[in-house]
Every structure is written in C-alpha cells, then in structure tokens.
Length: 452
Image (cartoon, rainbow, N blue to C red; front, side, top):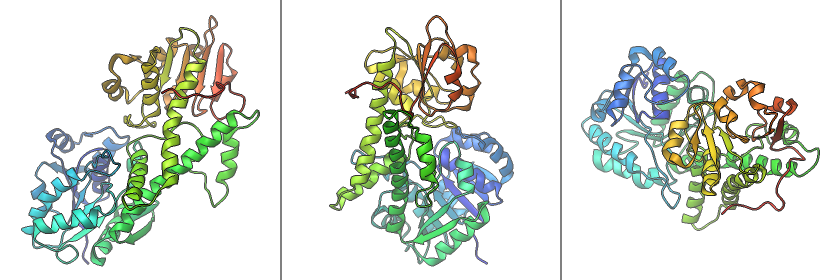
C-alpha cells in the first residue's frame, strides 16, 4: 500500500516546529528545514527552537525520528511529502504575501525536476483565495517542468491551531481540511493524518479555491462569535443585575450556537484571527462584493481596544500608576501580536499616563515594541505592589497565586479591572475595588468616548 513514510517540514517556527515534533513522535520520520541555522541546531540537539508549551517533551518522544537541516533540496529528495509552513505576512491591502512560500517552492520545484518518485507538496501556510491555482501551482510546474496532479501531488492543508496549545490542537483536530490537485494526493494525505492524529476528525476534501475560502471563513466566523459575546458584555455592564456569563452559558446550550468562544471580555488578537478577517474582506473587495459582517467585526474589535483604554483612564485615581498584568494575546504564549494588553499599554503611554506592566512569557517581546514608554515589573507581585489601578488583560494562572495581602492596601484601596472575571475572589477583599467586566453596575464613563 502506497503511504507517506517520511516528510519534510519547511519552517521551524511555532507551528512548523510543533508539527515536526508531533509527527515524529507519532512514528513518522521528519526532516525539519529552516534557513536559520540556530533553529536547525536547536532541533538537532532536541532543544525547542521556539516557545510552545509541551514542545520539549514532544521532541524527546520524537527521538531520532526528528532531524533538521538547512538543505531544502536534499530534504525533498529524501522525503515523500513536503509541508511548507513558512510565514505569509499580511500586505497593506489585507492579502497574504507569498514571498516565502514561492522562495521555498523554487527549491522544491528544482528537486522535483530531478526526482522520479511521486512527491506531494503541501501548503500549510495560510494563503489568499486563488493563490494555489493562479500563483503556486503555475510556479511549481514552471520550475519543475512537471504537472501537478500528474507528475507530483499538490495540496492546500492549513491547520486550525491556537498558540499555546499547538500540539494538542494538531493531534486532535475537529477538521482536517484538504484542498487537493488529484484524488491520489488527497487519499495519501488522509491516510497520513489518520495515522498521525490521536482522535477521529472529520475530513473535508475539495478543490483549492474552496479550501482557501473555507480556511478564512472558519476563522472569520469565530471572530464574529467572539465579537458578539463582547457586545453582550458591554450591554450587561450597563444593565443592573446583568451577567454576561449567565447569558452566554444559556446561549451556548443551544445546539445551533454552541458555547465555544462565547466569553464576553475584551478584543481578540494573535497572529491568525485579525489578519484572516482582513483577508476575507480583501477578497470580497477584489471580486467586487462586500463582506459587511467581517468588516463590522474587525471595526468593533479595534474599537474595543480604545474603549478599554478609555475605561482604565476613567477609573485611574489622580496621579495613579496603572498596572497591566498580561501582554501576551493569550495565556500559554509569548506572542504579543494584536494583544489587548499591548494595545492598552500603547494607548495609555501615548496619553502620557504612567504604566507598569508584567507578563510571565511575553515581556521580552513587548519590551522590543514598547521600549521605555512603560515601566517593566520584574514579577506579578511587583507590578501589583507598585500600581494604584491594575488591569488583568491576560488570564495567566500564576496571577491566581498572588497573595491576598499583596492586592490589599489599606492606605489607598486599589481598583482591579478584571477583563476576564478571572479573579472573582478579589471581590471579597477589603481595601480592594473589584471591577469585573461584563457584569451590570460597573462604573463606566458617560458617554463612552474613544481616545483618538
């Protein structure tokens, strides 16, 4: 039986390194490829090249089945399938750049030209609709002088993962999406995933354009759901006795809706959701239609960051120091891209307000962006002790370990704005004014203006 026995994974970033380790741990030989020799050396020494929970243990399980090289040509020659997992940065118009994909495709195409065996090229990086048919396929065929679907396989196979849980999400997908050049390629990929993943996911196999559109549609629908819950949270805050958690818990029990991502809080961020939303908008504009729901979702999400800054400034005591706990866009990650905590720090600093911030994983990344515009606390305890008002923007578990006596200050009670209602026990403490977002009766400025 024809099977994929050895794969190359091009791009050893957060997704690529985790994919490579997980596939190897499940018994398939993997050759990781990256242009950065430091990442290659790290993988060969069984040291995680990126921050991702559980990656070190997964690399140990992978053992000798996982290796890495900077030689992409040789990796393609020695493998049955090559997964391209490189960055596709967003361009000014919202579309994704294919610069790094096509750079990898050039070497892959050259290797395919010299290779007689059937080989599958898998694009895992998120790309804009029409990229596969109009740019990637023609480019690979031109370089290799071979035809996709006849001489080699080509697939679009994006992953649906979240940083901080990449390994779990990759090994336990709800859906495996495969855009395929031909049935042989789709069959081989489906067989590969059935051997690698730990659950029994649904498989959706289709042509390239439908797969490209499906990837963007799924993430855009999720962001719409998040934004709807955030809208409810703002509504509840103005209605005495209202509680967004009670409302969304009931909503989630309706099978037509479901409870995932219905957590009314603050804006969504990260490297995928915001840009996938913008990409869908860009595609609609490109073909002469509109994506009003996606446009409204993006607009409301950005306005929510400014609203939070306004709320914090409103509650700040005269001459008070503002503490921000959490700069990563989510717990379990060091990524600050489109992070609510980072946006909050930026907005407040731009208004000349004193900010001290702390994050257990993302502090170095935030420092590179904010520099000396904010003060950096060496620990969560130090951030709380030196602040007069504290905003919990990322629900890191370690924040629950801050002793009650640190939060309390008899001389001048602290205000705590808990964006995720993560620390409800603070409501019982003396000398603390606890403000949980999403609950009725919290003091909000009237009218609610937005900083420019």
